[in-house]
Image (tube, rainbow, N blue to C red):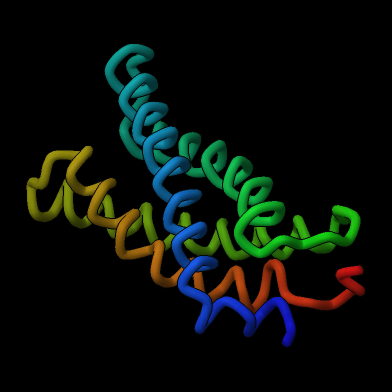
Length: 138
């Protein structure tokens, strides 16, 4: 079964995705808080920086542990992963801005809510687009 379809019915694979996501979520939230509260950055800039950092970590962890991709890392795969994440980041930033500026939700709560919702989308996209079987997985 291909890498892109193997995990849809794999409870252990999804559990790994959740653990990686939780790790990246906590790392990202820490970065958002540090950059906003300690460095004085605007919350959207902090969120963008945190998203990029957490996603780089996520690519490494998901690739090796969740999806168990064994082929050599390549730029096309990372570009696909980054493309999915940048699209997700754009959606996330827009949603966070609406929640904070439009609905007066605290920025950390808005980031948390959006991250949880985007996890469902990202699991699907990374399995089908980013880390799909395209090269031999050995």
